[in-house]
Image 1 (tube, helix red, strand yellow):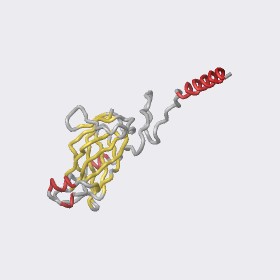
Image 2 (spheres, one colour):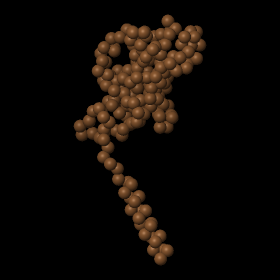
Image 3 (cartoon, helix red, strand yellow):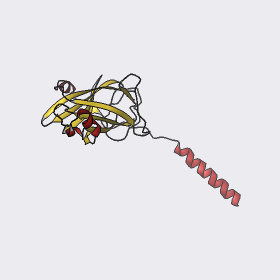
Image 4 (cartoon, one colour):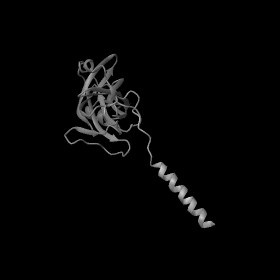
Length: 190
């Protein structure tokens, strides 16, 4: 009788595990464009780059400041995502990344009161970034103590971004003025 109970338990466990292999149909992210005839990538968690309807206007902002995109780190693996060309990073649409850099008005010795990252390529996309992060190295390099909090980061997914190569800009707000700062970096979305 003990042997029969064990066999029944084993069969029930196998049936339960077999059911775990079934996956529900994937649903696109809210607001994500539905690709016709193509499966959407798996949903990345957290904030997403969104289409920037003001792309042409942003590209007309005056250029000012010094900024950089210094690293793009895969949030799941904590590994950097360098691209195959110089000054580039490679990202997958189904993953989330931490984008790290700094933004300043190096001539005035100030940091922006607000910033967002802007991708310009086949289309334009943007996401808000958290500024005011400690960067004593930036202040030391420019010899301006006011730049000690020039760091920024943005945790972002690319599920809404069409594949392609995008130049990365930082849109800085200094007082009431918005300015465009090229990072001279690119992100290749796959």
